[in-house]
Length: 356
Image (cartoon, rainbow, N blue to C red; front, top):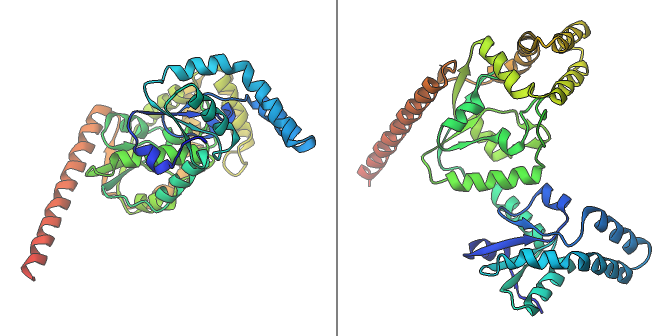
């Protein structure tokens, strides 16, 4: 009988490697961080096995699955052997036949191997239980601003940051997925929890301001509330530099331009008139990218995001035309406010002690 381990204990165990035996499609949707995917069935093979299970019998489905797996077994073992110096933890979706079969095989070959109890599903439960009730300890700063003011670029130059758009692989607008492969909600939450755990003992966190929804993923309520109660910093930038940033970000290749045109033509009429949409497409066809970008920014993006920006009171406003200077200003601000908070905490503690 294969030895098993809980997800809580597995994550604490040193010198381990998680091997996920699910299909590439399942693995891509979400997986345990740093796991490697050695699928025993391809996406198509799993569909075939599932059909046999439903239409013929469980035994025939198992036999077909074994037949498929046996074809890739030499390569599978070759990859597993690369990690023979570690404790190998095998998971499938819910700790069923796929991982059980692999663990039994590897045990017979004298590998140090364990089966993850409950499979990936137990890890997903672990993430939900820990993330949805998360308590953020650091002070939170949020960078707000209209599109292409350089907020994401600033995050890359600062410490203790959470790039929500990077985790979501979406820029949070109708054009937000251009050139990207958006994350699933599960993957977004896995990455978010991992990043929060890395930062929760720091004195501060810097996040880019977002809507509650980024593409198809939702920011968990606890983080959304923390962002709204944070210290807000407004980032501004000249329209010319914003337009150039839009070109660099969105208009990189011909396929991207074609996608931009298609999205533009399908924008709601209340956001941009048909005439204006045709003008933008014409400018793109003429390779007048700067003019097209300026129209999209000032007539589509800015009005769309102004309501969100108006909901907050900003403690500071920083222009990012000179990014290095903007980074220095943000560092000074966060340092100053953290010092004030620390001093206030010390005074409160002293006052409380004097009343004892």
